[in-house]
Amino acid sequence: MSTRFDLDGFLARHVTGRSESMFAADLAAHDAELRAAIEGASVLVIGGAGTIGSSFIRALLPFRPARLVVVDLSENGLTELTRDLRSTPGQFVPDQYLTYPISFGDAVFERMLRASGPFDIVAHFAAHKHVRSEKDRYSIEAMVENNVLSTARLLDLLAEFPPKHFFCVSTDKAANPANVMGASKKLMEEAVLAYSSVLPATTARFANVAFSNGSLPAGFLERIAKGQPLSAPSDVRRYFVSPAESGQLCLLACILGAPGDILFPRLEEPAMLTFSSIADALLAELGYTPVHCSTEEEARTTPPTDTTWPVYYFESDTSGEKSFEEFHTADEDVDLERFAALGVVHGRASYDVAGIRSLRDELRTLFSRDDLPKDAIVSELVRLVPTFQHVETGKSLDQKM
Image 1: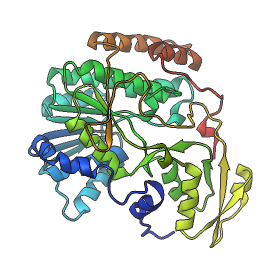
Image 2: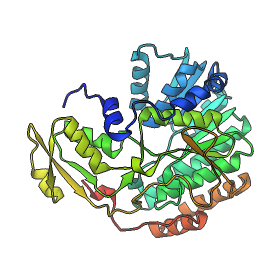
Image 3: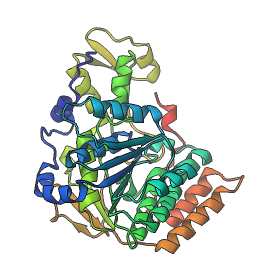
Image 4: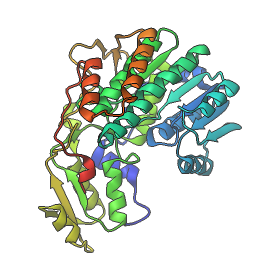
C-alpha cells in the first residue's frame, strides 16, 4: 500500500460523498460570532489527542485563541498532536500551548484546573466510545466511571468558576440506547442538561467519524499494512462525517449552542453506508479485488496477492448493536431552522444538579458491591434511562476477527 494514500480524497469520493464540508455554510454565516468568542480566549481541551478532540483543535486554531491547554491520557497521542500542529504550514499555534498526559478524573487534574483556570472555553472529549467496551462488570464500571461519574465531577468543578462555553461530546447511540455505552452517554447528556442551569453547557450527537482512531475503517488500513484479511458486518448501516467535519460540528455546538442544546448533523437515510461497502471501495481504490470468504478461518488462511485481498463479511450478532442510526427521538423538541446543516434538540432536563449528584452516589454505591453481575448493572441503567432497551446476545466484538 502506498504511504501517499489520499484518505481525504477517498472519503470525499466513497464515504461522505462531499468535496466540501457539510458545515461550510454554517461556519461562513457565523464566522464573526466564532471569532469574537475564540480570538484571545483561554481554551482547555480534555481528550484532545483523539480524532474528534484533535479535529476540534484544528477547527479552533484559525480563530487564534491566546492559550491552549490539552489534556489526554495518551502521552503518545499528545506527542503526535504537537508534532502535527508544529509541522503543518501556516498552522497557528498560540505561544501559551501546553499538553498534559493526565486523567481528567484524577486529583492532579483538579490541581491543574484550579491553578491554571478559569478558562473561557472548555471542551470535553475524553470518553469510552466503543460498544465493544461492554463485556462484564469491570469494563462497564470503567465506562460509567469515565462517561458519567468523572464528567459529573468535572461539571461540579467548573460550576465553581464557569467558562463562557462548555461542550461535552455525546453520541447518536444516546438516542434510544441499545447498549451500555449509549446509556452511559444518555446519562452524561442528563448531567450536561442539569448543569446547564449553572454554566453554559452544550453537547452533540454524532454520526460515525470516518477512519477515526480505533474505528473499523481505520482498522482496514492497519490490517492491509499487516497483510491481514478484512472483516466487517454486512448489515449494519451508519452515517459518516469526515474527521474535519467532526471538529467543526463540535466547534459550532460549543460556541453557538444555547445552554442545554444537543446538536446533531442533518444527514438523510440515503447517505447511510455499510462497513462492508467501505471495505470494498477501499480495496478497489488500492487496486485489489475482494475474495469473499465464508468463515474467519478461511479468511485467515487465504493469502493476499498483488491483485486480490481476502474479506469476511457477516451479519452482526453481537450485544448492543443497532442496525440503524438515529439522532433524536420522537418525543424530543427538534429545531431544524437555526442552522443549515445542524439540527438542534432543545434538551429537557430530567434531573437538577442535586439529582445528578444523588445519581452519582447511587452508582458509586452500586459499584462498591463485590458480587455485581453485568445484568444487575444493566437493570439499574434501565431504571435510570427509561429509553434504554438493552440488546443482549451473549456475544462480544472481542470474539470477532
